[in-house]
Amino acid sequence: MSYQHVESNVAARAGNTEIEEQSLAPNEVKRAAWGRLSTLLLFCIALLGGVARFWNLNWDGGAHNLHPDEWALNQVIRRLGPDLNPHFFFYGSFPIYLYKGTAEALRWLTGLDWLDTSRLALIGRFYAALCSTLTLPLVFPGWAATVGRYIGAGGGLYHRRSPTT
Image 1 (cartoon, rainbow, N blue to C red):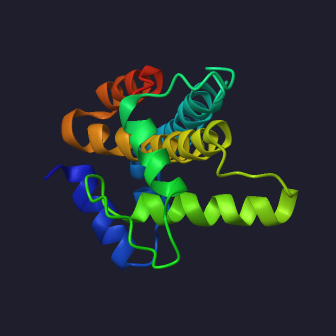
Image 2: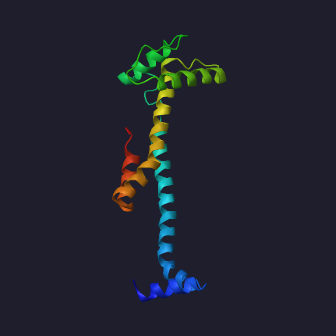
Image 3: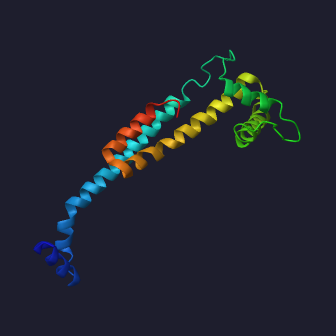
């Protein structure tokens, strides 16, 4: 323990906090600056990642060039009956009910048939892009806590670039 540190503790107990504030100020300023910078960086990464993920959700132009998993899920949702039993449990039931509920809500709002293959694919792609974008703010702090803040920023930028996450 340094002499200055002991002196600042004694001064703080005596009611004089000026010495302690002077000795801590540079570290606190750096920490506050990094906090603001990392928040801005995280916001920019999430924004750019969101734009990349939501850009052109209708990439096939309605030509029904669906991924086999996308096609299978769409067929299950379209034939979902009033008993709400999908008879399909490869991916879990939550996405099936989420897509069906969203399609019904959009049908009610717009008057269009959102269970049509091309429109239902857009609902699925929207939720995939949304969930992927929501993971972006989790990657940066995870990497920063694990391997350091600079590598955390690099990990966040790398994850932002990846369209398949």
